[in-house]
Image (cartoon, rainbow, N blue to C red; front, side, top):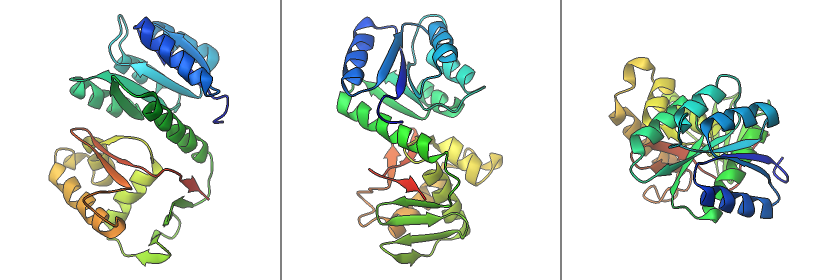
Length: 234
């Protein structure tokens, strides 16, 4: 799936479309680039890409609406391109179904890393096997067991539920509201302090240096993502 994956780019800036097409095609991806949200929907329906890169601000149909429409029928990975200052709209895009975001201007190597991570996650989601592995960390979904460096890690039920949701969406940015709703329920969506406390507990138990986390990464003002350079579901 990685080599030759089909990527659809939607951005109204010709220079960005051209740059992304050249750079992604040089890495072996098949790229189609369009300049509007309306054309993005049409191209999606005709081509069924493996991943989409969508600008937030486009004439006519904006990126949030594109994502909302796509999510009515597909779980295709979507990366949002956002400008500095787009934070409220960026959060909205994530909450309607975007998987990740990258802020303009951006480095191509960072974008490529995000693409690889999401394609791996999409491939892994097709597996029904119950064990998630990221380096020396493993999570057995059937047994609700977590191990680090071969040793069991004792988590409270809520800590486990939070970790499970993070690793099930490894590589995806999850907003504070999304995490609170999924783990604690709709009545807790404004209780950000709950989330900070439990993320702190998980980092103390899973990270060698909780102040420099390698697994649970903060996206300031937005939420958290579970990151591992390589991960798999076995």
